Length: 445
Ligand code: GDP
Picture (cartoon, rainbow, N blue to C red):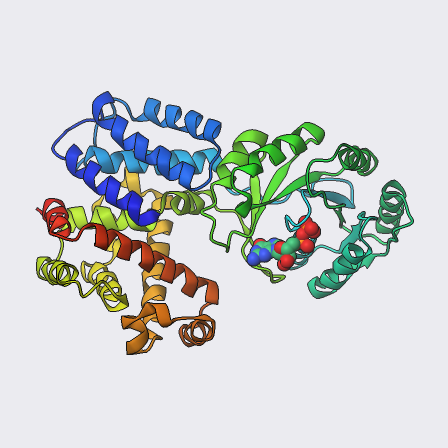
């Protein structure tokens, strides 16, 4: 997916070369690709429309600075606007209330509420030195109450018991009273899961809100939900005054478009991102970094680099010959590509050459990340045997595990790399017959 975007943008950047300004004519094609990229990242259509309109407004007529070509400048504008849409600075949790500060967790069943409650407890204990109590208002699933008990223990927080025969309101009142009397700084309230929007349960969480008067009402949403996240977010926003969002499962395959949709629909800041099932898998949300993820920044950076530094024509020629002769494109070639990118002086050194308008603080972080990413990928391929590199289809579960252990990464990361490789392979196949050479020549010269 990311490779396809790169391919398209490559063509467009090339076409826009030599033009001094961003104009209605040259911006149109580029925006179409950005629009596709956002839709592929699962951003909801109305949100995409608004976004594109804003970018167009900002981009039109803007002088292209220094050595930047209009295409590259537009990528910069898109990236900045994405980050601005998803957040304005770091939004940490608000605890400014008469203790205990109550945090109410809302969201669909399976979104990750219980897990996030415990992660948040750990975060508040370790980073904010708070005394934290958790309680479950999920009277429909005794297992959910038990689950909260278990994870609360792991977090090193205290858990307030509740039982399925109680009313959620009564649980809330009792927990609040206990928290007050025992001088807890924070009370985290987990709520009943909803498989879909459900009137009764919505009423129940509204009641809880009225009783608890939380300083934070966090909407927990699964990043893998994609397009559906919009409807869920809208329903919760209508029912509750949301103060923040937690986007979970960002470690999965999703490109995280839900972040943009949910933020746009609710207007609430995204405060945290869930990045693993483990209790420490919670990160303060970083909008700029996430913008890069949505657009596949790593690929765009590589593209910018190729355009400005030129490509190793000899290696490209060899690769083209190989594709043509039908040998196929294997993981050794993929590794070769990664190494070639490094040889060109590294991504961050390239960014130093670009005007600060594009590389502003945020960009620099992305570069570091992209570079680390390349190194990790190299590490993964280097942990494979020669046979596996030639025949990636051999790599099944046990081999994946071995490779992941060897490279010191999670199996998911191996999966991601294999997927990326497959996409690249698909692109190479399409380019059979000289297409690749032509493309590289145009980019380099
Ligand atoms: P709840 O029904 O909203 O309380 O959801 P749970 O907290 O029970 O989470 C549902 C599933 O998602 C569990 O298997 C969790 O381990 C998993 N989960 C939650 N957050 C994350 C995350 O950030 N990353 C991953 N990979 N899994 C998560």
